[in-house]
Image (cartoon, rainbow, N blue to C red; front, top):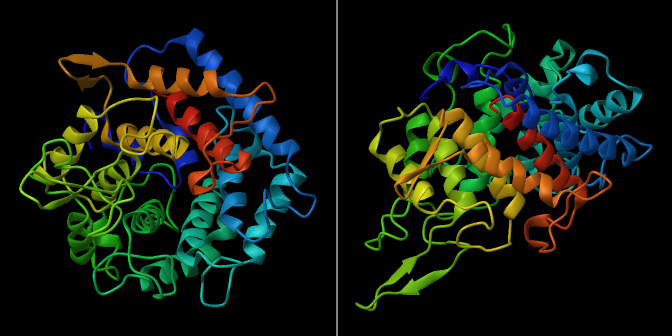
Length: 367
């Protein structure tokens, strides 16, 4: 998309971070600060791995995959080139949870775990995981429901915007599986014949807010007819769902993964909502709930969309620097992060530290 779609022809977000080039003259001093923050985070992650290879809990392999994705994204690339025994053990933990049908999970949240584990495996850039990835890929494709979206799995839940985004993300970054993962650039149209992309786009569009209130129009809700940000009753007595930040970035990412053009009205509409509601201090519409996930999705979405300076209320914002500074200032002395608000597991230091480290890794290459 805009200003450098070619950067996003790689497998996994850690791969993107490693391959991206700055869009302007690098700020060397600030990049060193960001790298120092990343180093502290990855040291904390390595020190807090369970002896059996997992992070946080053995019930949810996705948390281990997120930690590995963060470790693989270190700017130096050392852990990818020379995996430590802990890294190898972490990957073994994930592959040991691969089921015969291709799914990767332990206890519930089947699609979420499988899709996130795919991203962690892709970040290793190691062909030994290709067989697991191909089977997982086919399983994720099989999870598309008649409405075009994806739920938690196995077809037992209603589709929602977040699970749909994680599934499309895993499919998007694995589309070149079996080819050169760093430089090959093939289109979705030639590589995704099994997924009904038209239906997927229809579901994404169904989650986009078409409110008469400009405060919400163009943003996204969790699923058709339901928003985690709640609803308001307008003066005419009609109920209107509220858009919110993290899920609106999930919507923008989903449109990108579905290969919509940058100037598509649906893409521009959510981009405008996000610009108009830009902040790094809260998850718009949700306050402190999901703050780190919001910042993580913002970083991924604006990076892949190719935004250098973000137009906000007549001014341009150096969003990379603002997000990086926010994360650096919130980092604890031991290198970890945690949200005081526990919504969406953000009390979990492994989860939030992985989000933050991956965000900083992407930001590092654009500063």
